[in-house]
Image (tube, rainbow, N blue to C red):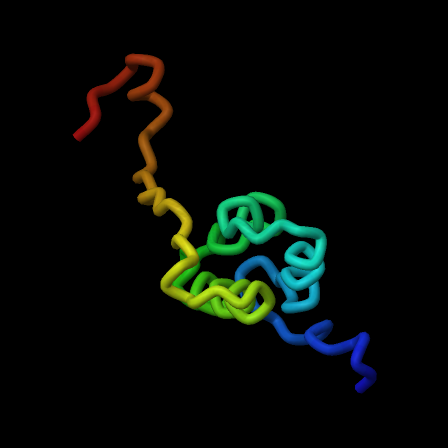
Length: 96
């Protein structure tokens, strides 16, 4: 594998199929805020809610920027909501 291909096939976010190369390209463009990376590549937005990929992305940012991992703020956590029947929204039935 050539140096240019490093990270091309390494999947960091399995839920959204994001590679190490995609993350490193954003960092090379100056995007080092994990919230912005999250919005652009959808890391941490899959079924695992970032349990696997967020620590890996923090490590990549730390390595590429020279920062310590604990200096990189973790993205905001948004608790998943529970489904609500459509009838509740239109007033046809009461929510249990």
